[in-house]
Image 1 (cartoon, one colour):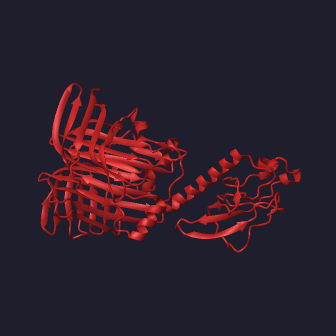
Image 2 (spheres, rainbow, N blue to C red):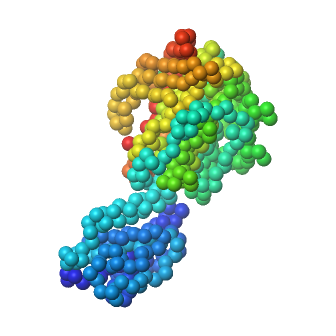
Image 3 (tube, one colour):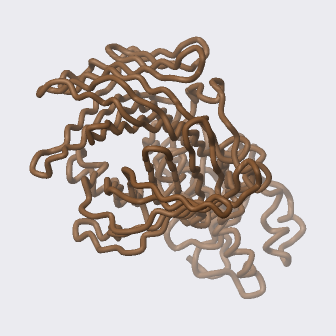
Length: 501
């Protein structure tokens, strides 16, 4: 193309919420002396658009939701006044126009200032990446730590809030989310199990529910019993406090103090247990919620946790070998991820200590670089009838690691969990669990059931390779309340989860 010949065009590309790529359409970006792009690209249905640059072109200018009045006024100050009109056709809301300047570039006097060009390029690609990430789950742009408001900010003035029955309602969001109620069971006989209901929504298009149960084998030579069953005919109680599906019920008592869990959807593990809290439940700060978005008054994502850290459990899980009595201790954890999970967190640490007199909970996640690799932590120390201390000033530290040759994740081999806060009388409360994790009880490849070729595609596209490392050592909780020092042996269940870099 001859130097100085001003020929530009814009290509609009549409992504639908079904994650399919639709046709592209060429539209002239300027009239009358800019001809349209080459024909043959086909029509594009109406809807949100972003712009893709053609090979050999550079220096885009972007405007959302409509094009600027005249590119020349901003970028070509030496153009004739007749060129400084607003020749753009009306465009639908959400359309982004990109002016493409072919190479070789215009004469030096008419080149776009490099800083403005780079800024426009970054803006365009960040916006396009965000639209694709919203639908297809790809990596988000880098927004930085200003695009997240940690629950720890609330905890500076209100370390924690005791939760009521109303705080445990299912939200059943109509947008992308994962909502879970998880129960960790520790029998007096040394058995450890998980019972969990997961409700998920993908982009408001499809909802799924799953009941999971896992019984950890006490014999290292025998496999754990893992059952995961899709649920049908899902319903919620009128007040959204209880969950029902075919052969499955998770009910919160009217007094808000206990849950009953019944599941017969997998005959390998028939669950019939009751969990009763013996100490108050809590959430970090006032709401228990971390918010995501460039406008935190109108966040596009969220993460919330609430806990009953110290509970009594009674009942059985019946397997092919007979019923297992789970009379003992339990933890209940509610979680709502109001966005795609791998966008909300790249790593997790979870610790649940159950002793004769004390319980301790710690939940920590680290965001992806999109949100500044921000660390958010909530935890607490409790005994029967009382929250000793709770808040967001805690730490989970991997004091020793080894590389996992299967996936290159730094598998922890020793940890240090630290709690810090004050009790109701203003006394300092400090607690620590520290030491070797021993042999891990399990490593969970979250994508294990996905075919290998699909797994590699998803990992490459989304940037995720989620693995969960699980441990259950006997440990000692060292607790100091004011000048009083307490040491208690108990059972620790801990998980280290790696999702993305």
